[in-house]
Amino acid sequence: MRTLLELAGLKKTHGRSVILDGVDLTVAEGQKIALIGRNGAGKSTLIRILLGEEEADAGEVRAFPTLRLGAVSQHETIPEGVTGFAYLEKKTGREPWACAKMGAQFGLHRAHLEAPASTLSGGYQMRLKLTAMLLMDPNLLVLDEPVNYLDLPTLLLLERFLKTYRGAFIVTSHDRAFLNAVADRTAEIERGKLTSSPEKVDTYLLRKAEARAFVLRTNKKIQKEREHIQEFVDRFRYKASKAKQVQSRIKKLSKMANVDVESLLPTARIAIPSPLVTHGPALHVQDLEIGYGQRVIASDIAFDLQRGEHVALLGGNGMGKSTLLKTLSGVLPPISGTAKWWHKAEIGYYAQHTEAALKPEDTVMEHLAHSAPPSTRQEDLLKMAGDFLFREDDLEKRVQVLSGGERARLCLAGLLLSPHNVLLLDEPTNHLDAETSESLAKALQEYPGTIVFVSHSQSFIKALATRIFEAREGKVRQYPGTYDEYLADLGAAMEEDVHGAENESEPSTAAEAEARRHAQTILKEKRRRQQKIEERMKVLDREKSEILAYYFENPTEYAPEKYARLKELDEELARLEKEWYALLGDAGA
Ligand SMILES: Nc1ncnc2c1ncn2[C@@H]1O[C@H](COP(=O)(O)OP(=O)(O)OP(=O)(O)O)[C@@H](O)[C@H]1O
Ligand SMILES: [Mg+2]
Image 1 (cartoon, rainbow, N blue to C red):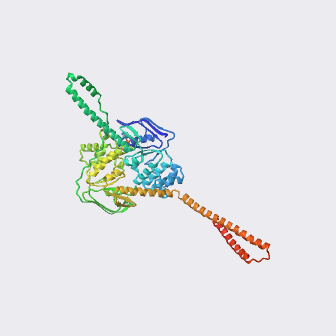
Image 2: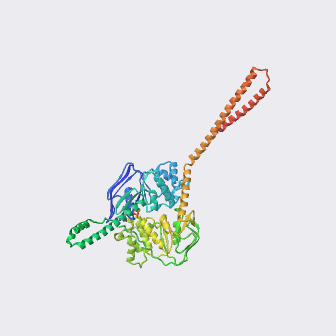
Image 3: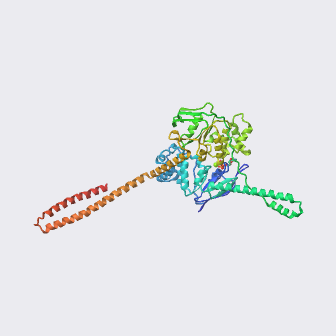
C-alpha cells in the first residue's frame, strides 16, 4: 500500500489554548479513516491545514506525488441557469455519459441533470457536488461532517457509496452509526494529540474505555496494598525484631506508584428548567398551507398534539420541515389555514442555522447575557455557560472563532436560559459531539413539555421520538410505524431510485444496443431463411433440369406425370424466388 499523505509534528495554538500539539498521521491508499474528537478538539482545524486552507504554526504536510485529493465545498454556490450536466462537465471535463453514470450512484436522474442546478433542492445540489468530486477521480476524499449538510436520503447514499469505495478517505462526524458503517480505522484528537488505530470507532472507544477501567482497578489495588503495608510499618516500626522487614517494606512502598491516568474530559450537563405542564391539548393544526409568499412548500396539513408529546419530523431536504417549524413558532405566517397553540404555550425555537442567531463579534458571555431575560443573575449565566462547557478563557472567546459544535452549544445554552413549555428544535444535534448529544437527548427525554424536532441523528431520534411525522411531496403526515420501520422503507426506496437512475444513465446507447441486437437477430433469421430457400431451389432446379434433360433426349415422349411435375416445380420455384427477393428487401430496410 502506497503512502498518500503524511502529517508530521503539526502544531497550532490560539492565544493560550493549544489546539494541535504535535500531530502525526500517515494515510495510505485505501485507508478509511474516521476522525473523531470532542467539539473544539481541532478536527476542522486539522482538515483545513491538510487541505492547505490554513497554516500550521509548526510541522509539515507531505503530499506524495500519487495523491489526488477530493473535497466538497459546502459553501460553493452553483451559478444560476447552469444545468447539472453543464456544471459537471465544466468542473470535471468528463463526458455526459460518465457524469450520468456517476450521478446515478447518488440517485441523480436525467431530469435532475438536465434541469438548472440552482432549481434543485439543497440535497440534490449536494449530490451534484459529491458527483463532481468523484468524477475527478480522487484517491483521498476529505469530508468534514457530511452528516451536517446532507439530508438523510443523501446521507444514506453517501454511506452506501463509501462502504464499497476503493479509495481512501478521512471523514469527521459525530454520528457513530455512520462512522461505524463506513470507516475501518479511527483517528482521535484529544488534548492536542492524535491517536490512530486500525479498528472501527466503536471497537476503538470500547478498548479505550476498558484500558482505562483496567488502570483504575490496578491503581485501586495498589492503593489498598500500600495501606496494608503502611499499617505494618506503623505497627512494627519500633520493634527491633521486625526492623529488617519494616525496612524492606518501606522500600517496597517507595516503589509502588499509581499508573497515571488522565481524567475524563468533562461532558456537558444539560439541565432544562422543568416547566409546570398540565395535561391537555397543545396544538391544533387545520388546513394549513405553508411556504414563502407565493411559493407553497406544503399544504393540507392537519394534526393535533397533546402536551408532553415528543414529535420527530422527518423527510428529505427541501420538503418543508424547517418551514413547518418556523410556521409553528410564529416566525413565518401561514399562507392559509391555522396552527393554534393552547393559550399558555411558551415557545422556544431553535433555528437550524445557528450562525444566523449569533453575532460574530459577541463574546460567549455577551451572547448569553443578550439571550437571557433581563432579570437573570450573573451566577445563573455562569452556571449555564459551565454546564455547556464554557469556562474561564472560553467566556471571553468571540463567536467567530468558535468551532461548529461550540456555536451550537452556545445557541442551546442561550435558548434554555428562558423558561419554555414548548420546544421547536431544528437540527439541535448538528455539530454536537456524541457526548453532548447524548446529554441533550437525556435532558429532553425527561422534559415534560411538548417538543417538535427535526433531526438526522438516528440515536437522537430513537432516544426521543414518541411520534413520527414525515414531510414529503408537499404533504406532512404522521408515519404509521416506528422509526426503524421508517428507515427500512427509506432504504428500500433509495435502492430502487438508484437502480432507476442507473438504468437511465445510458439510455440512448442501451436502447440502441438493444434495438441493434434485436435487428441483428432478425437479419440473421432472414439470412438463414434465404439460405434454406436457395438450397431448396437448387434441389428443385436439379429435378427440373433432369426432367428437361429427359424431354431433350426423348423429344417424342409425352410422359404426362413428368410434365405435371415440371409445372409444379416451376410454380414452386417462382414462389421461392419471390420469397427470396422479399427477404432481401426487408433485410435491406
Ligand atoms: N482564532 C481563534 N482564537 C481562539 N480560538 C480559536 C480560534 N480559532 C479556532 N479556535 C478554537 O480552536 C478549537 C478547535 O476548533 P475546530 O473547529 O478545529 O474544532 P472541531 O474539532 O472541528 O470541533 P467541532 O466538533 O465542534 O466541529 C476550538 O475550541 C475553537 O474555539
Ligand atoms: Mg469541526
